[in-house]
Length: 390
Image (cartoon, rainbow, N blue to C red; front, side, top):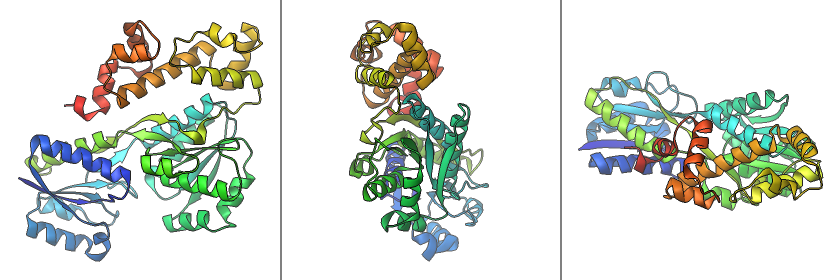
């Protein structure tokens, strides 16, 4: 039986989702025994103390949050497999549970661009890898369209808590100074809640003046926010499963051939904090609202034309100016986005999802999905869902 020490923050949804994936793997290939060690043991016991305890317990592996000066090679030298969660920066000599953070940033930028925004901001941390790289991806995607990003970045979590809670604050002053309407991406849901609370205190309207998007899709935090926070979902539970698979391999191979586990962003989950379309063109705003409210029907461009007093050529020209897409392509991309969401959130078959979207030809939607995602719907589901990924 493998004995595994877990040193992670189970008070956050990311940590609990990782644990779900790890325990699922252990139930299938174990049994494993777990010791949940509070994160403050890093400070009170240090690496030497944790190593001593691990040897006394005869632990086979450790998954945890460690500082970058923790000398984790000492665990490997003692034959104990260790995988680090990169909660500050990536480790160099042991495998990491990391993420495609830049891709999440690009996903957030694309989401806001489709809503017609021309002003953008990012709120996060300078010295934490997952925040820094999400901001970089956000900025790089927007730069392709000629847009710049307004930044507010902290150097510590303590600083971020002070600046949103007490008023007046530098954060509230920054929010008031931003051009409106503006699309703001926060590095995670915690910081997204800071923004929604700071906006409430300073009487900045969400989403009318500031649309706010977080990352992690923590149901508790997103629904605690006022208004509820839109967020980018991650395949964290699948990441936990792959972490356990790697840990099992390291234990059996005596710490050979290890690699990083990459948690991928999967989709944007829209809630009230971004439920608006930012364009000064009244008719295109009407068209966008109609498309999003009716995407689960078999929409055609002619259906959109009936909603606005514009000729087809005029609609196409103005729509492209606001969104960067022809009307047909915008509908196509949004339909694939909704199809993807149902793939990951339901157990419906490809045919049933197509029917839910008002489409009679499931083979055609599967072909279109492959054009966008580069794989079949079944392959995509296997990639991101544990139950399908054995």
